[in-house]
Length: 161
Image (cartoon, rainbow, N blue to C red; front, side, top):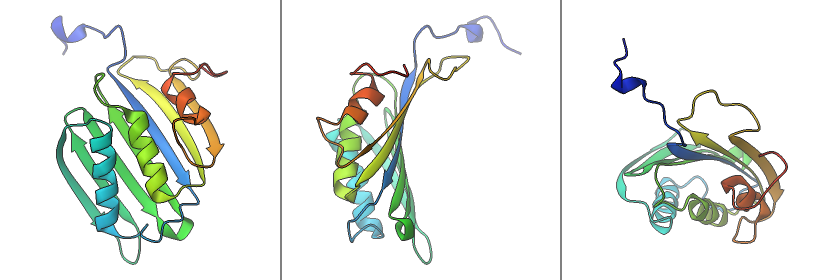
């Protein structure tokens, strides 16, 4: 049963979630758990995150899953080296963390040649496709000039706002 205080609804998003799919990752260390963890920690640091802890697991025979818990929320990764594919989640609350920078660092370190980035504002009721969700794919590295990244984080107007 909700009391009056818990029935308060946010008027703006409580967080932003970037869901990143990196394809054709060509770094030879793609199945090295220490290197993947270092890459995730570097992405968190360069995004101005406050790192709380991290945990990573190496699957047999290949593949890694891990999470970096940050004061602002989390960064998570799951790798499929046999497909040269990584699924990454960057979830941030507040305005301190630069999620776009985390995405750039991970794309570069993993050597991704193709990507899909989806962005969602979190904490709003009644998500409707096209209102708070954005998805766009691209080829090549994700960098400062990447229209895919600019569009996904909302710094460039796109057709599916």
